[in-house]
Length: 329
Ligand SMILES: Nc1ncnc2c1ncn2[C@@H]1O[C@H](COP(=O)(O)OP(=O)(O)OP(=O)(O)O)[C@@H](O)[C@H]1O
Ligand SMILES: [Mg+2]
Image 1 (cartoon, rainbow, N blue to C red):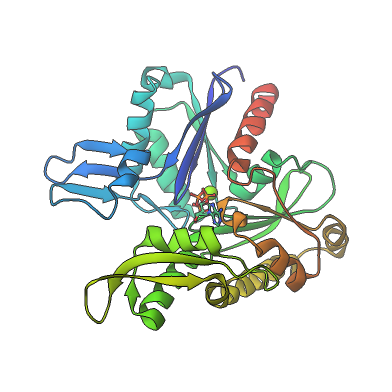
Image 2 (image 1 turned 30 degrees about the horizontal axis):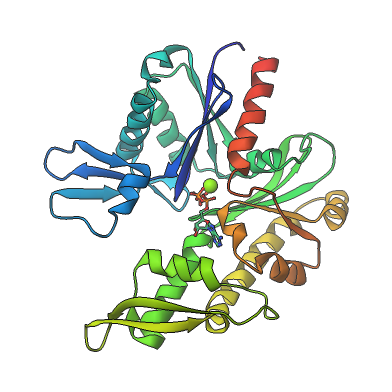
């Protein structure tokens, strides 16, 4: 295949786009689009749209078209991608282009159809849909084409894609909606219910990234957080500790370990032996949560490692996969 390939990782939080023309990632921004409420004209996308999220006046609608790793608003996704491509002056070149989409390993027909429709609306030559966990493993430098089992868990914002791969194919897989955002939601609920402080999603994510640590042996850290007192309804702030946040997050990590166990429990014993040796590879932004690797290691009793650039693993994988695709076709 000597045609161009554009790799699209439409994530719940972030979209990464790779182009084989420049052999580089040409877009890496939040999956957010802001529209005019009346004319539906696109106002902003990506970082600029994300900045106004939660602060919009009546004449703006801000949409996050991917929810839980799946296409939730096909029309908004097409608008979002069209805008990116027109900004990058790529629209005209589409006739001979193939799109490579990353999607959860066990992707429903409904989601496949939504992706196919987006490809049709963008008038591209052909589309490929490939397992996100597999692409992330390739991007992290794993040799997924060898007859050795690779266990990978890509923890995104809205979905965790777990797969065992051997000889280039997904042998068994599973997914759960316990991912980065679930930790944020749990922190928000805790703050409202136990601390009577209503905080925004971005503040909850900030707590998680700044002081969240699942390792009980880690240092107890503090952060000041601002919000609205749910009793007085007045602006208020309070100090939160990593110890209390750990208690909120730990049950979610335990659930994640159970989902990984479910996937491992269904594979052939020879592959289990490989996994005992090779361990678990974590990719995706959610794997940056401090102490997650340690807690999974102790719950699963296998070595756990985090990819070098976990958030870039899928787009790096798309790059390698596209190059191979071009050679073989
Ligand atoms: N340092 C960090 N500590 C903890 N979590 C982090 C950190 N950095 C990023 N994250 C989390 O990573 C998630 C985003 O990761 P990623 O970009 O891989 O998701 P996505 O591809 O958009 O989502 P999905 O694959 O679920 O559709 C967010 O939930 C974010 O809070
Ligand atoms: Mg992702």
